[in-house]
Amino acid sequence: MELDTLITGAQVIDGTGSPRRAADVGIRGGRIATITAPGGLAGATARTTVTATGRILAPGFIDIHTHSDVTLLDNPGGESKVHQGVTTEVTGNCSYSPFPIGAPGPEPMRGLLRSALDTSLPWTWTDLDGWAEVHHQVGISINLAPLVGHSAVRFAAGLADDRRPTDAELAHMQRLIAGSIEQGAFGMSTGLTLPPSSYGQTDELVALASAMTPYPGAFYASHARVWGGNHVGAVEEAAEIGRRAGVPVEYSHIAIIDTRAHGHPEQLTDVIDRALAGGLDLTADVYPYTAAGTGLNQFLPEWAQEGGPEAMLARLRDPATRARIRADSAKGWFRGLPWDFDSLVLSDLFTDRNRHLLGLSLAAAARDRGEDPLDTFLNLIDEEDNGAGIVAHNRTDPDMRAFLAHPAIMVGSDGNAISPDGPHGLPLRPHPRFYGTYPRILGRYVRDLPTVTLEQAVHKMSGMPAARMGMTERGVVAEGLIADLVVFDPATVADQATFTEPHQLPVGIGDVFVNGVAVVANGVHTGARPGTVLRRGMA
Ligand SMILES: [Zn+2]
Image (tube, rainbow, N blue to C red):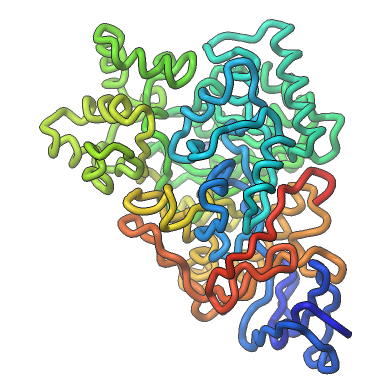
């Protein structure tokens, strides 16, 4: 037998949750051509042989929650992710997708989350097909699997403000969602603390999710309405939307950020368990850290963000409106959560004037500037043209581990595919989840602080997200499937990225294959760009 690549001596964990078994695996033509008992391919010839004795061979990880919508255009190698063994990035989360683009053009979306959605390339596309084409022209090392986002759809329909859509606007948005699904989006996402998505009431969301009902498997992914005091209601609303629209639900980055509810993960998992018992197809995802990461503008009152980023900046720059914003912000954030300025650490600042503040808390930055922290918060959004980003230390490890252990909860990083030396690299201080999520699960939460078994962990990173995405060709190691694969050492695999030094590649992950092509070999990026944009029903 002639093979492209032969992997010998591995313990195969196939992604279904089944126990590992010793096997040799042959790759040919981008697919897993054969799986045999050890030694069964002794007579085969292969251009490359990987000796994986003592190591695990698993499906490449499918990161169900990322914001790599355009980062690969500047960083096509996607080093932060491929070195973790991630072979597919699910994009378009939290209502942020780079399509559809309507009459207002791309600027509102680009300006909304500048740390992720700004690019050196112009946004020349208007729909999923055009966005995919640009990625294919650039050439990428990792696969992308897009969702369509509610904020993008609202901007495209001219609904940047806090009001209900007219019947005509609602029908327009439904067509935009159905059109994106037709082009291959796997589902739609919301960001219900993020304007303009947050301006959508439950009925609007049910109507929009219903546009997906004709498309089997197309699902509703929700960054939910986790305002202060609403951590349970947030999960209930996501389940309600799935039930009423008749679509599956993915509850994004489950966590408890309200300190008053820390220690009660069961309040959320009880809602999930009841929804499952009622027959709803609901899953969730979690990342293995006790901090969030987001744009600083997310902490502003919602009314101040109406109309998109330019209107928001204009309000901040108008003294009278600014005084109102300050007075409202002084009452707390997310509708009443108390400020803890020591817990909010600056991750993204792009101006020369402010870069020295990267890595400082808002409290420390305020001391540096001789200001009240509330003014530093507002000034940095203004001075950085809404590019200021933050890491928010606001959750607990026991809560996170309870979510990770739940059978309906998989892994998703909420991190992006970037390069240490690219425009998202130093001196920016992104959340370490960009570089460490998957090895951190395999090292810390399988080996060092056992929370899930290795087989469960691999399932939550591959077979389980593949099932949610309706992918039948990936996420499992089986003959005939596409060869997205990772080889790692279970004894040494570990994350290295920290909050103070996030741009650190993990250790223990030696070989990664995307569509049968090695993108990491012996721990080194090969420079290959075999990635492609995947489409619903064809992945
Ligand atoms: Zn989110």
